[in-house]
Each structure stands twice: as C-alpha cells, then as structure tokens.
Image (cartoon, rainbow, N blue to C red; front, side):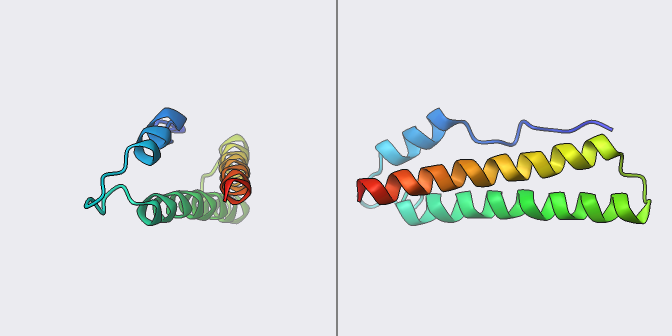
Length: 91
C-alpha cells in the first residue's frame, strides 16, 4: 500500500494565490482560499479517522499507514493553525 502525498498545496502556491488577487475575480478571494484550506484539513482528518476505523476493525489497513495518516492530519492542522495565528496577528 502506498501513501500519496502529492495532493498537498505548496506554500509558494498559497503565497501566489494570496499575493495576487484581482478585484473582480472571485476565484482567488480570501474567502475561497480559506474555505479550500479548511476543506483540505477536514478531508485529511476524515481520511485519518477512516484509516483508524479500518485498522481497528481489521479490514486491511496497516499500522504504519494508519500512523502516517494521523500524523499527516495532525501536521496539516498545526500548519493551518499557525497560518491562522499569523493572519490574526497581522490583522
């Protein structure tokens, strides 16, 4: 079983999206970027919970896959909280 980590958004892409908003474009608005980030963090948490559930029920999840999924969810949440803290302090 392999773990795909290519779905994570790079920090430079987030900086580009935030640094260059166009006035009439709703695609790169702060609200959309924030909603997308919250969705990614929540999706990662959901995947980790599903992985733990499958491991505990014995449905083929390996222990290391489960641990990696929970660690990934934790790191994404910590990063999101740090970004939130920076935005709040900048405001």
